[in-house]
Image (cartoon, rainbow, N blue to C red; front, side, top):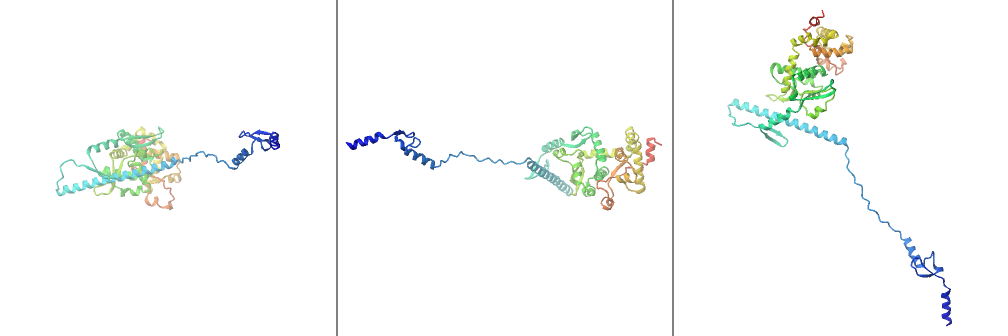
Length: 390
């Protein structure tokens, strides 16, 4: 009994408290922060084992392929250029192919070979082969072509670019283009090429071989094509403020397949009006009119006398440098009345002689333009008499 009583007394002396974690009664001396040893062991194990947080699903950034607008524009420009080249080559092949057919037909006719009865179909060379085009398609293409812009220039009076389709062209508009070519075009070589093409058409009704005018347009062949040969409407819209465009020529082949410049229907009207406008009788009549008198005035007559005398004595045109340095004329007197004398028809721009143009010793700028009388027989005295200034 004594042993049982000692055990009970021992239990009575214990100070028991409940664990905050598991709620089991535990001797207070063994509690640490009111937690039993077993729970303390579990807490320590958790602290030793690092918890790996759940990673949120991070989506990779979507890389968008961004192409600069400049690169896109350059690509579109290259594509359009290639398309224009393809169209030009196709057009040339069509013309050459048709001329070959016509040539063969002429030879067969000369040899007495009969032709098949029926409608002759034209063949158009395309990128995929030869395509047969009927008459209805050709009529539709002609209608579409007539709606394209054929004349464009910057109007300084209206401060805007003006464009005209074929059905909007009038004789008055063509006359305006004639004057613009003679006065506004700074390339005397191109004017000389137009003069040669015009003379060949008016006098003989013939096309002009390209080799005959290459000498005059070799310094600016691109400008010549942009000014006088057909362009796409997109190209015409890109013309600058000091540019103009008049589709009066086309590049084709003659009967012996030589590359030539041939006047378009618009060009035939242009050359007819140009020839009539600069006819000597018309120039003399224009001088006596109020229009001519107002343009020439006193300083215009003096400038014409210098240009005519220089040409008569030296048998060569006079340059702007010579008018300024040798004859001591003012800039306004040269530029303004030079323009007026050209518009009336008394003088014209001409290219310098070959040796003068390409001889570096002359020290002439490449843009230098020479002037000479259009009709040297109209002397300064005759001009004064016509104006009643004597």
